[in-house]
Image (cartoon, rainbow, N blue to C red; front, side, top):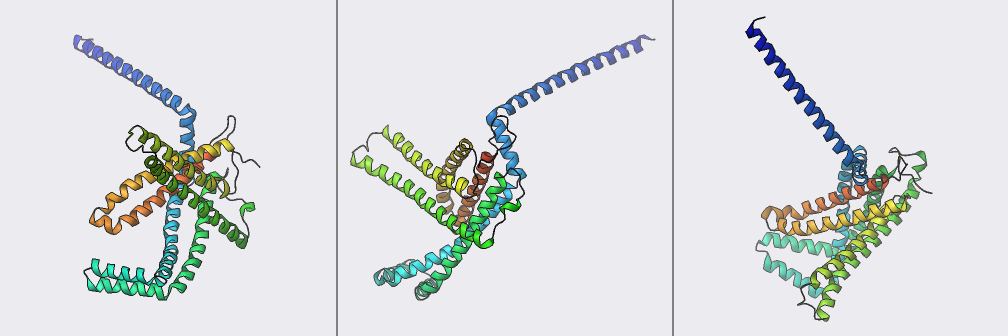
Length: 330
């Protein structure tokens, strides 16, 4: 073998040795990375998040969230009809308020055609207030009951040990509508309690601070804000406890139920804070003034639906040690 061939063989051997070292190093790096990933995924909280995301996606959480958003927005139409009729009753019994409203329209709207259209609309609302009110109330009850049923089925899809419905879950349609009607009443009561607690907490906070003359004490402001935030989250907790416990008519492990409900309450408070910040910014632009309220409302419904279903999956996948799935307790 010539010297040239020997040198080429040596270079080839060196290259192979370098490649082998690189491969070995890559294998070690991959093995180390896999161990790190396995270690992180073995952390109970991280493992729970992974199980929740898998169940949420496998059971079509995004699609159910979009459907709930659609039915939520659609249910607002009869509610607006009923509110429109209620305003008609108020204006019919208060001529001074009606005259003031008409004068305000004439003074603030320069387009005479638009002003006349609004005045005719108000006149129609007053004359047809009974018909519109009763129709809106009937449609609101019907759409509200169907909305409750859709929300319940979406939560059950995330909560059941098996996704498919059992024969035992099918019930008489009349009996189901009656139960969903009372569920709707319960949800409205829960909403009223939540809004009342949140509103009273905010107004009481300002009143107490002003009465005690503590306006100038800066360090008290974070404490009062924290107290108000705690009351608001507590009200949210009561609302979601009703949604996860009473509405789907399922029983979970109490610890799992409370943890998932607390997560939903905190998440809902974050959503409300974000929407409170975003909506005024949307309304400041010309396009936002026209469509901002509609888009903001749809976004609120969508995030509410996704949060609700995600936390339902969180409750269902909060497995005790030695259990493969979250079992219902009788």
